[in-house]
Structure formats: structure tokens, C-alpha cells
Image (cartoon, rainbow, N blue to C red; front, side):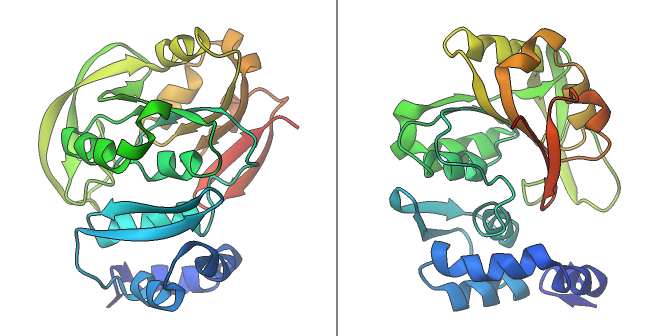
Length: 258
């Protein structure tokens, strides 16, 4: 039995999550039609693709979504605030940018942020560039996968586009094909950013199964230039220097320097 796109067990677990209840109250600050948006989130209704407008600290913006999965991802980022931070940051490295929702979150927090985006899927990359067009002067976009090496791989394409990965994690995802993609080492990404910036305020790593390979290979000399890192994955604490404190924000583990 399912409620929307979730099985009943997942629905009940999330119903008792305090973070999700807090997110409901945030819908009013983000969505122009909060009640309708809550209904759509719970029951996965709505026709896609569609453009939604949302409120942010820098005013009204819009984004095109392509599935109920995209709508849920938007709500996790903007309403549950999985990547919440203070608004005085500037430089962001976004690994696994998908259609640009996390990047859009950071770009809409202030007017000085710059985001370096990495997304391997050709289709997602096209959608990302479209969604971020108005922020073009503040983004650097790369149609690349990120891991612990430089080379090539085959990207396993998941039906919704949200969970495509160079590794097949399990059989619960609906993979519909493969495409060849170029892979770049995380240290190459960091070094490139530090040539132009003295610090990286935020690093986000959500590359669908490659998180451990990526985070564990960051050169020790780079950690002093990173203020905060968000990782969508488990068992990464041992790869983060002890100077970073940690907490969980939704599905993301957040490590930060005070």
C-alpha cells in the first residue's frame, strides 16, 4: 500500500519526524500556495513538468520541476532546510547538482554567493542550466561526475533522474539505461576553486553512492580552506577532521567549524 509515492511504512515514519513537522510550518515562508503545496507533497499529486514560484531572502524566484520527486527534493531543501546556513557565505562547491535545486537554494540566500556545480547526467545538466539561467554570472557549471579519480565511467540512469549514479546501489531504483560520463577527482575541483577564492564556505557532496570514495580522498592540505561540508551518506565522520563539529539536517550530515 502506498500514500502518494511512498509506502505506508515510510509515510508513518516521516509522519512522526519532528523535522518534517517543522518543515510544514516553513511551507508558508517558501510557497505562494502553502496548503495546496503540503497536499501535493503528501499525496504526490500534480502534473509535470511545471514551473513553481517561491519566496526567498532575495525575493521571488521560479524553478521548473519535472516530477513529484523533484517537488519533494525542493521541499527537503527549501522547507525542511537540509542545507540551511547563515546568509553571509560566498563560495559553494555543489557535487551532484541534479536539476539545480540545491544550487538555487544557495543563490537565492544572498546576492554575492558563487556556486560551482557538478552534474554528470546530460538531461539533468540541460535542466540545471535552464533553471539557473538568471544567475549565470554567479555559477560555474560542469557536466562531470565527481569521485576520487580522473577518467570515465558509465552513469546508470534512474527513471526520475534524481538517483542516477555511476554505481548501482540496490534494486529499489528503476534504472532505465546508461550513458558515458567523464569523472573528475574531488581534489581537482577544490584546487580549481581555490585558485580564485581564499576559502570554500560550503561543500555539498551528494553523488549517489560515491560519497565515501569522494570524501575520503580529499587531500589533508585542503581541509583548512573548507568551512562547512554537507554529505548525503552514512559513516563519513571518520574522514572529517576532528575540528569540525557535526549534526544531521534531514538526510544530510553537516560538518562545520565554529
